Amino acid sequence: MSQALEHFSLSGKTALVTGASSGIGQAQSLALAKAGASVVLVGRREAALDETLAAIDASKGRAFALPFDLDDRTTFDILSAEALKCTGQVDIVVNAAGVNYREAAADISIESWDKTLNLNLSVPFFLAREFIPGMQQRGWGRIINIASLQTERAFTNGMAYGASKGGIGQVTRAMAESWSSGGISCNAIAPGFFPTGLTAPVFEQPDLTDKLAAQTAIGRNGELADLDGVTVFLASPASNYITGQILYVDGGFTAK
Image (tube, rainbow, N blue to C red; front, side):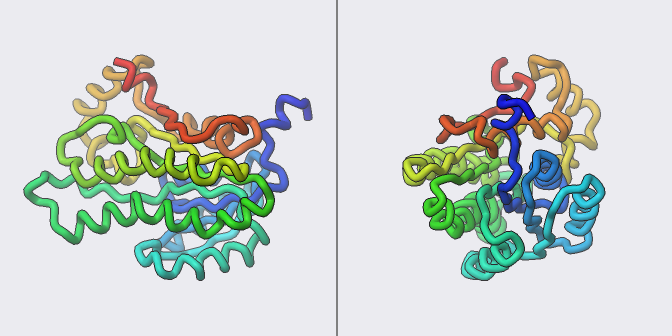
């Protein structure tokens, strides 16, 4: 392997990915495994999680399925202990689990607001914090959060989701300020419009899908494979001097 490629190798590293049963989390899990990382797959749906596990096994990667409901933050010590049983250590945490109810402001309930803010904003912080002491001891770690176009922009029926993703932008910067002196890089990926379970209501409307594609500089909406490179980059030694940043992978949507 050339020295340049070694910068992107995750051989000997271990990653934990939430939301690994589908969508962006699943795609990121596959990309990390192909780059050489052992991956702990976390998600609520055991059968779907096993599909991700089977795909990684088929590509000769190494992964472990860990079914877990992230709603209860008080059980994260159990989750972290189970993850460490699988791999011995966790070097990379990818917080890809999320929810978007797409409710108008008048329709947002206390329950849906709290669930959105908990899963999208609180969980990434409290779960990542479980693994910080080990990363600090080794002097190397990676936290990758999932931001959004709504980290910067307001969208119709997106008040709760936008609040959570605006918060992710700030908590990513705060993570970097707190932890990067110990060798832990903390960054976020902000995807544009990608076809996932969360965005199904958008992609079921051809006119809206075409309008969003036209808003990009490239002229198309995202494909999950477009996230592979940036995920591996931010997880690898290639990004050693990058922290506290939000990287928009949106085809130039925010440039127009």
